Length: 348
Ligand code: 13P
Image 1 (tube, rainbow, N blue to C red):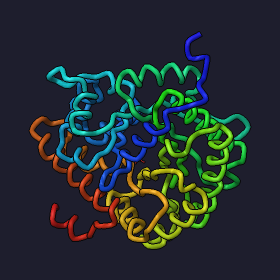
Image 2: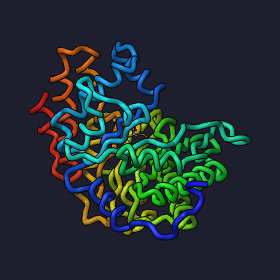
Image 3: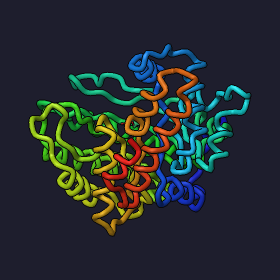
């Protein structure tokens, strides 16, 4: 049966080249892989009907923005990787034409984890090798799998962290076997009323477990990109840690856990404000030298502004493209440690 005989060797030089390109200086990833349910929620918030055409028009707008010059890769959803723009050009070709790598979300979302109340595990491993081979044919150079870990009273459990880390490692190995770079995304959620030190403790536990499982699965770290949360105070905590503390505590945990063989770390934004996501990334890059590149793989922190500017109206497309280009530029500067708050006001 096709796909049964797994190779021991991988094209590590090519995987490493792609992973490095994803975190090239001044560039980061646009996560545009919102699932059908998530994009519906985003569109509802701006009063836009969630039709296939509107989803296409919105994503086409982003991919044709000049902001793409700061975007190394775009994570696409299954629908988008198969979609064509209004003029018939495949959206993948528009992404490639901007000098950006197409990528694909391959996990199938979360399900409750039995006997672990309040915890979930990400599914999607069945048939994944075959799906990856198809996505590679459609142009995908990298993939994404998101594991979700919540913090609360008595959670996360070892069962939850281990099950999610194991699935991430199985996914990453299958990706590399298909010459696709895996983005390894273990997200510790920032919902909750915990303080920043609790977030640090859980993030460390999660990352240690993930790298242990990647090792057991024989994943080649040089051909991966890590997409973690930053270490922050819970959203409902009464005390929000300042930028400098977030940067210091995040770097301390990452240095404890992430081997230097990993080419780059591209943070998720996770519900931080646009400005926090930029300022905190910038602060970390000012604390170098670091063993890996530190960049972004934001969805909300890159797209909230253009979505608001667009509001589903053709006459707002240019304004939405400008809003996206501005955030991409600010985060590009932050990935070099060259962002300044004054630059935000200049554009406002
Ligand atoms: P946010 O930046 O909105 O957290 O999304 C990143 C992402 O791709 C989550 O999987």
